[in-house]
Each structure stands twice: as structure tokens, then as C-alpha cells.
Amino acid sequence: MTDQNALNGDPALSKILVSHDEISNRVHDLGQEITNDYAGRVPLLIGVLKGGAIFTTDLARAIDLRVELDFMAVSSYGSSTRTSGVVRILKDLDEDIEGRDVILVEDIVDSGLTLRYLRKTLLARNPGTLEFCSLLVREEQQGELDDLVKYVGFKLPAVWVVGYGLDVAQRYRNLPDIWEYDTSVGS
Image (cartoon, rainbow, N blue to C red):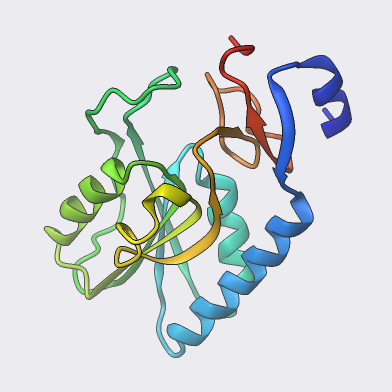
């Protein structure tokens, strides 16, 4: 599905907020930052599924170091566009993180609920270091989460977004751009 076909066929996709080229450039820059910060080390990237899978793999390829990957699946939304307020781990890590340099990779930080939950959960496992990287952070979270999210791709307004791994009811993950999604039109 091309972006133009998606736009013509789905009135819920209102406009592109971040283009694929902008994403690619920013992922490259984040990879260079992490390469510089972790020189001589082997960071473990923990991607948060499902939304963070595409970003995590693209980021891993942009880091010019040996990296290792693991994934967690958590849920606070289910198939809804509203958070339940409860974070559940659906898939835990395969790797032991004790003493490791860990970077948790998120697709988006909305309220920070999931981020804070994962921070507490991962710190209890005694990593050597723990940092957070998020492709998207809500503008209204600026300041409140700046001390938690070290690597930020883009700041976005409080709109629902899809594409590049982000979804509504498992749809739109395959769009290469990040689109604003109109929840009043979409189902």
C-alpha cells in the first residue's frame, strides 16, 4: 500500500506528520549518538513490541558497534485508542540484563506510564546502565520526561499517530511515514 493509496482509501489518515526521509535521517543521527556514547561497549537494545520493532531494527543497523537485540511486549492500550491505565508484560526478555548496558527502545512515549513501569521493572534486574530511546515523545511531556528519555527522535503534538510500526487495532504499521490518525473518522 503506498501512502497516496492509503490517503485516498482511508479518510482517517489525515496528513503526514513525519516523512520516511525525515525518519531515516533521524534514525541515522540517533545511531551515531549511540555509537559515540557506547564506544568500546556492546549495548543491548530492548525493543518494545510490536510498535517499536521497525524502529529498533533500523536503529540497530544505524549503530556502528556490535549490538545485541532482545524484545519485550507490553500492553496498556489493547486494541483501543485509550490507555487502560494498567501496563501488562505480554512477552518478557530472553536475556539476563544484569551488568549489561541496556537501551530500551520505544516507538512512542505518551503519558510516560509504560516508560516508568518498564524503568522500575528493568532497574530491579540490575543492569549496568539503563537508558531510553523513543522515536516519538509527546510535546506536552517535554520537561517531565527529559531526564528519562535520553535519545528522542521527534516531539509530536497530542494527536493519534500511525505508521512506521505504530497502529490502530493492528493496522497501518506498514506505512513508511508517520500519519496523523483521526479517531473520530476511523474505526
